Amino acid sequence: MPYYRVSGEIPRKRHIRFHRPEGGLYAEELMGEEGFSSDSALLYHAHPPTAIVKSEAFADVAAEARLSANLPLLPRHYRTQDLVGSGDLVLGRIPLLGNDDVRISFATADVASGLYRNSTGDEAVYVHTGSLRFESVYGAIDAVPGDYVVIPRGTIHRWLPAGASEQDPAAHPATALVIEARGHIRTPARYLSQTGQFLEHAPYCERDLRGPGSPALAEGEDVPVIVRNRGGLTRLTYAYHPFDVVGWDGCLYPYAFNIADFEPIVKRTHAPPPVHQTFDGPNFVICSFCPRPLDFDPQAVPIPYNHHNVDSDEMMFYVAGDYSARRGSGIGIGSITLHPSGFTHGPAPGAVEAVIRDMEAGRTMTDETAVMIDTFRPLLLSDQAAIAEDPEYPWSWARAARG
Image (cartoon, rainbow, N blue to C red; front, side, top):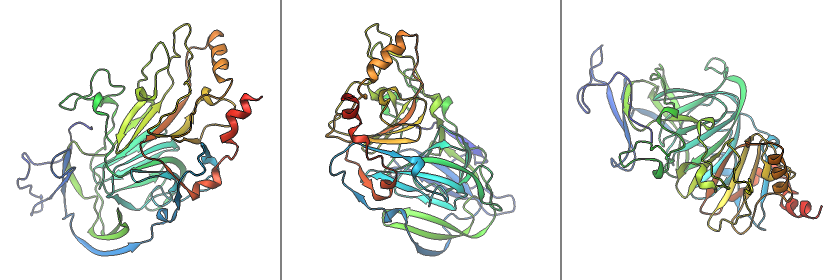
């Protein structure tokens, strides 16, 4: 739910003539969701955004990843450090998990991407390490570690790692978790008023959202754009560079939100994951686990209890700190775990006692940061993720319990 913004030059009223200084009219483009019935933005182009000169099929390397059911049923642990990847943030994605609602990939970007438009759904890109510049028809966002960059469906954009340019595409590598939805990624409705303002109990607000800067203006003719739709990838060649927007306004645009700006909700005893929810997707949620005061009841058990979410699979990406509940299980920074429906999971044996001892010794805060995705349909496993899997993880609870 980004709020209304205006950037660059726009006319006084919608859908009236907007004259170019050199003569002629700017070309108005409506970017709108749900068939004129939801959020939208109006963009004003120097050239018609409809002018294409070529359309070619393009190989979809990500589609070649084979997704299979989690059989035999097991909790899984992947070490992203073991994923050998390079390339750009669009075509260099390594699929890890997915279903008909969402695809979750990991990418190591060390070169600039080409122009890209995902027309199957919104994306949320979580920047783990390094810095990236996100450029789109709306303008640019400089993304740093901890940023979620939420990209509305249909936005033409590209990613440039720090130091990259069109003249020199090589750069300092950055890593990111990429969440591709088959629909829209939005702020949970319970955080918003009936008219869309963030409420006082919401764990973040409008001030925490960073929209694009000034519109990006670029020259060029016969410019290729990779377009994803449900049939695969196509390379469309545009007669003019799509970054020719002189102004736009509305409530639909890319934005960044940093996980450090999420305000944790604290209880006397342990609070369940919905208090960490950050975004809604189609049949999935994204949650942010951030440093927070430990549960403060004198008898509190200050880490998660064993739980079996019968309607969902849980994926967790451990991005910083020490996740106390998984102490001794092999989980570290950069780990991704999958705890599927049908499996009861919880803290490693001995972790509860260890945290209680820490509290008695004066510890008052957690220090872990993690991104969690809960899906309400089973997640399938990518064969490309198998090289990074820890085969001992499923037995870590029994191994710790037996000493």
